[in-house]
Image 1 (spheres, rainbow, N blue to C red):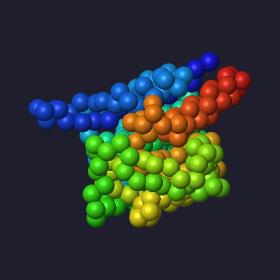
Image 2 (cartoon, one colour; image 1 turned 180 degrees about the vertical axis):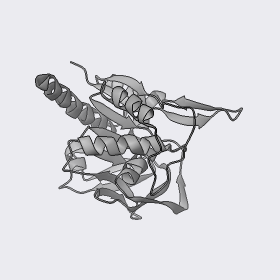
Image 3 (cartoon, rainbow, N blue to C red; image 1 turned 90 degrees about the vertical axis):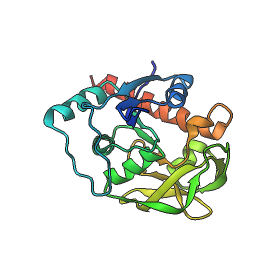
Image 4 (cartoon, rainbow, N blue to C red; image 1 turned 45 degrees about the vertical axis):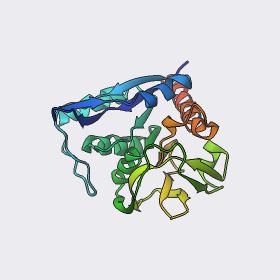
Length: 233
């Protein structure tokens, strides 16, 4: 019984400035390598609407139902990182929050999870976009957090490819921080799985047990969700 994980595709511009959608190979491979099935959650239109703080739901009824039907196929949802952030990512995150569907957000995906519940995102004064470095800094994880249960360590090393951070996380709790105070993990322990990470575990999971534990335990929650839904039906 394999959990089905819907990876939300993101818009990006090609060299010809044409908008396309993409799913990172590292992200989908992390799902497959940990025993899940990865499928794409595709945007219902070709237009890109940038997600900002105080975002407004601009989807049509038909577009919403296209997302509902895609999400219904899944046992969990994953929001990717990436420079472009689409309004529909916030819509999906809010839907998962309201209906307690397991969701994992990575970097920009985490930011959209924060925005979805009314939080605010700021830009760092110092560039944290150390794209080429495997490990950049350590983070400290609260021992009483869901994140600690996932990873099992109070301090771990992470990569760092971000330029933004949370100014206000709304109802979410910050459960891991870097030494400069930047939030590295946010969560809502009252939900089955609503966890966003600032770093990119998909780039390290093959060599780092702490990073793989995030995917492994996310999938474990999703398979329990699948079993629960099967019993209800």
